[in-house]
Figure (cartoon, rainbow, N blue to C red):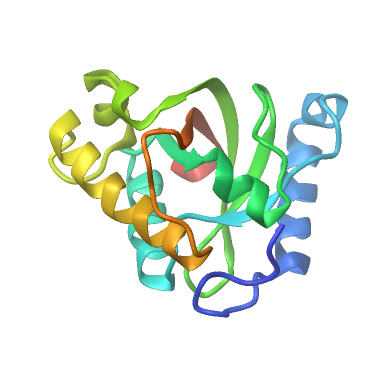
Length: 168
């Protein structure tokens, strides 16, 4: 788990824990699922975090993709179905709690039209998704001194926006 976004902006963990406490107070059944709730951000820059989180808060983005190697390099466990995570903006402020509802691991090329649409980015086509994610994953691999190859596995995750209630 990182303490900052890719631009070095610290994630506000105290505010994220307060948001989590508010969510659990309103949804006690969430506590029964365990206390795991990683505090994360989308993308590899503050600007991208804001852009993608905006798509979540406005509604079209209900999926995300992560390289298994990126999770491993960060020392983060893979998401789990039913798990929650706190999504922060580019300034490190918590803005939403998301709950993972579907997971699949596979090669980049295995993305389908429906997943590309659900991710809510670009023109929402598979071709656009592949082009954008090849660029993005090439950057994340390069940051680790690697080159993106067909051997890299991707975690395809669908989620629901569960908190705050006013934006669901």
